[in-house]
Image (cartoon, rainbow over all chains, first blue to last red):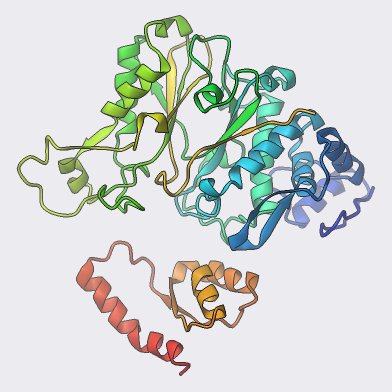
Length: 356
Length: 73
């Protein structure tokens, strides 16, 4: 079999499936796992399904002189193991992470080690079988696994986010292999994330967020207990949000950032809580005292009278808390995903998915 | 690196200081922008944890090299 180049892509040939997989490694196309050979026919099938020109530009990464086209996204979606019907989600996620306010050069290069979390909302979730329940961040679902992996391969192969070269993550996290979830809409009275962010419920969207790894939260199954534990976890020292070095707003000496929170379990548990109320509670309680921030050398100076009681919010505004109802229905587990950096350094972006 | 190279290419002399853990990244960025010979000063990593006196001392140690690059010396 042979691949042929569309424009400036590499051409390769192989004799059988195993040698094709090895060729993918040899050419540096892999994230460490075997890639599906991006044959001309398969890549063309993806582009044809999306109904968009192969040379259409999805965006650019000017700092690295990279322009990302539909064709490049398709080759990486094929390699990731996607089905053609997943490809519109990959395209929208790629457009979203190339939006200037996402500032992709930051989270894709930083020592902080972020991954691009994709949160999918709307009818496309059911159309392509995305998982929003048991093992939300875990293995076992092709759509979640391969859409998230496509984004990583696009970052590595099309955006030059090569580990050790332009991706300088000190630790990174497992979400850098794949990091795609859906919201369990219809199983909660809460408005879905994309409606919170200005889209219609019938729209299909993907939200990208430069996130650290999920911190799992286990608490007694009462809203107050879950939220109290969640605020405690999100207020810990050691996240990007509680790091010194404000960017932009010099009146706040820390990197206030956005946050994603997920709630699993039984929606009925939250019947007395709206998403707005959840956000307001968390915004008021995700904070740290000036004294603690000084102990952690986040803020400079000696601890002074009043510092124990003086609290600093770690999140700019309540709407910077992205609330998602997702995860197994068996238990009231939750998660907190701190942002990679300050909101002015990277802001979550939601884009509509263009279903052909 | 990106900004230093662009300032230089815009006609303003620039000197870029990078910590030595980032040598491959700095070289890669210079190559990406067609400036493989762009002079870069590397200093010991890290600098984030230096207090002001230590940072000043480090900067003073690099000043001659910076001046030489800026003046084409």
